[in-house]
Length: 410
Image 1 (cartoon, helix red, strand yellow):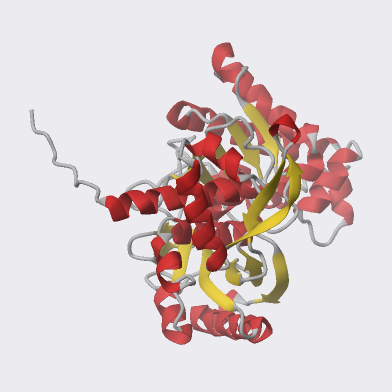
Image 2: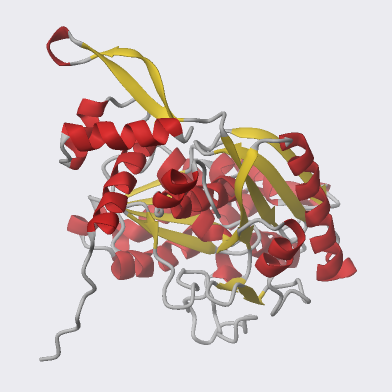
């Protein structure tokens, strides 16, 4: 049997691992004490004291107010230093660009959004993105910018850093936004699929991950994306296209831009339900939707909640189709919790019950009973927050850069 040789670890590697443990413990549990870190990590108090001192000197963590500890003692809490450094988060949508200035705890300080017209091409949109980023850099002034995180739609190949396919948005294929932004600003840029970014946001900033090891975040806005997060780390797959939007639920179904047929995204997304509403409106003359010139998802959900039979059917069908796809996802990934983004949240149980009904019917009771499926509780844009979380992840994986340079060197 072939035994692959694993590289050994020297003292510098071990120290860096310990630094990362301490830093991420503080990230996960703000205001934790040195004693709590020791219990959580198993590290000796002397080791923790030394590492904490290093990070305080580098302005990455700060001491917070005294808190009650064991046996009535008072201990000093520790937290990330939100005032020291900033991260820029960027989200590219098919009709909009959003750019935000965040601290390393995920707090938003500025947010700028501008509409884009796909007819004007990718080059024009990227120039607008650059313009907005420059505005936020001017707002940040002399503050240290640790990096730029960019959430992208479509089939995104992570190693190449390019979009392979973006439905209804030609001209992006093969372009490296990462390279273009790095050349423009001289900062390190991290690009990630928007669904993976949302998964990271749910893990780090949502309340749903408590007690979970595997979280699946599902977004149904302009397409259908899914981000699988395992103990805080995104599962990308070998090329960065792992997800559920392009799994087949009907092998005789319509062709998809990805080259497949009968893809899930063509049945249960926001665009799919709106398209179906228009196609079947004539056959439903009594529907409230006939009173609107333009039909959007909010219009459909509003009509459904006012007992419009046609609109309610559209909402339930969207949930049912998503349920079919999630059955496959549960068997493939076995998540503890599935978090659905806000698109259908206004429909409440009308939608969620349709999803759960399929899962309950098609999963073993022992599997279904341990699965949680809920809407997201996050109010900010999850893609922006997740892009920022990714930058923080990658920085905290190499804490020697922080200690070695007095700040983060990217």
